[in-house]
Image 1 (spheres, rainbow, N blue to C red):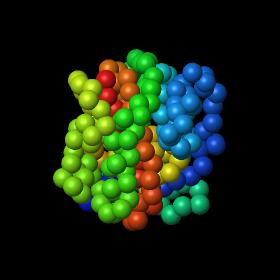
Image 2 (cartoon, rainbow, N blue to C red):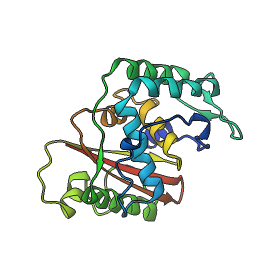
Image 3 (cartoon, helix red, strand yellow):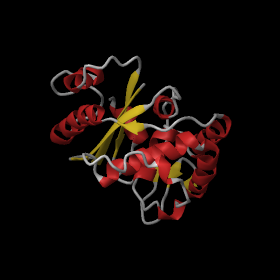
Length: 215
């Protein structure tokens, strides 16, 4: 991952309790996945909220708009953070969510979790960023370490610094400064059915969350 891209995706953590709404328990598909931490389960739950009711989620994240001051994002108790797109990025994301159709939930897959965990641990140990492992591995190499299943489609998204599920998901949804909005596309691709999520500490950016999606 290039340094310029990294600066795009980094934001600050803040309690998401102010955004709390009622969501059906069926969206919490990872609740019985004992190999996942509470934080990792929460990320899957949050992604499923986006996927199953994008219009409702669009209304939820609209509240974030008040935290923008020009290109700076300032959340309570935090110094301003420079973004690339400013509030326009948030507004574009809201517009996108309003237009797309609801889709199915993602279900946790232990082999995908292990693949995500390998990379999250690697990033945690080396302080590096990006999708290439310190051993030269890429996403599919890591998946194949743990699964012989043929995946027709897969992708990997990585968040840095955020340690709250809401803000991890929001960061990847907005995809500030990334013209392709590939991380948003990964999260809302209706053919994806499985995921692996791993949260680890990061020596420079405090936290990293690796998410692998597959059909």
